[in-house]
Length: 467
Ligand SMILES: *Cc1c(COP(=O)(O)O)cnc(C)c1O
Image 1 (tube, helix red, strand yellow):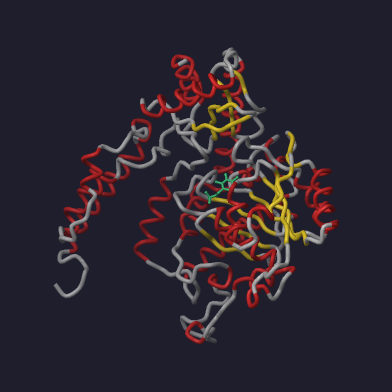
Image 2: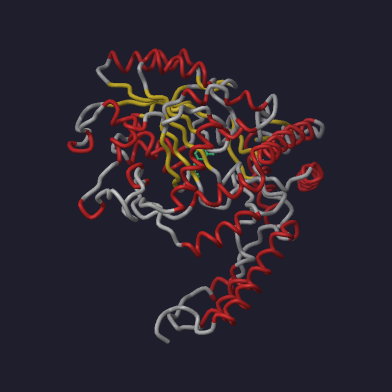
């Protein structure tokens, strides 16, 4: 054997075809396969001994021991955390991406043009101007780091060379903002205390409180530089008033970043949900995920930056071994490595491109609208089943409730925690939990194109039965 390719391609073809059939069977029967705990014997079988077994044995092991033991988010009654469901088009795209094995850090080839095409489509959906830049990343967490690093370079052009030093920059976000913003502040060396958390109501951040906090920081000699708005909060699915936030950021001369991890995609939804993200195109930067509410397989996130020059100023670095070429494979400017952390980059864009090609904006938008309708139906179902009760209004695709509002806070918390675990272990439904006003609640984030109205009813009945 002279290299690592299969010795017999015909045998490999048969093995790979059988594996593909197993994958398709698994997706086609997603309803029969909820999450279940990983059996200890299977876990033990994953240990590597470094001995070669060949592709044939591998294909069998992948089908039998690996494929069945995922997170269960392919199941129609999976609503925990914010998990996308996956798409059959994603299986095709990932197969082609692995075969091409393209490096999307840059250079002149088709895969980078696919990424450009998806970024340009998303730019238009979100209402960002032509000339905006973007780059695919793991998810909104990394997108937030890139966005806030760009925001900082905008006010501190020398920060890459000299560091931030003792300059006390401050940023602002609603109290319900995702932890990703705090982490980004930590990673950028600003510390999460510099992210001021502003109280919020059903309409998101209290803009009066925000303006006061900015003024207080200025009075104290600090330098406000960014506001992080939320389009779809992780706990309750709330949206900041993005137009009002854009007005405020503009008046204050602050960079407006929007965390639209899932909620940005209400841009594709029908009324009344589309209006939730009105104004999103006025942001300086936007983080969104394809792996949540666009259903694309993990991982697949995107950051969009309005001012390409600032984006480039924050990340571009091209030593001699990466120098731009006037022709050949070393051409193809701009290179994506100049827009983010990674030099070597996989082909995340292809699965997003494939989803859009296969289903179109209308098909994806209809699925997103359906998720909102189902969340509303779940909310109605909760309200109709006293003593179950909603813990927050259903704004978009999230429904947060308690199984028995008649109990004390501590009793409700224990009950809801127990129910979530019991339904997960029984393979009935996956709710996660969160805390609202000191009560641990059941929480469903519906980013699932397989969920039906009957699934909602069955899951609520199961909650009632567990109580
Ligand atoms: C999931 C989520 C994030 C983090 O995104 P990742 O893709 O998991 O890195 C940030 N903000 C919100 C609102 C989210 O739902």
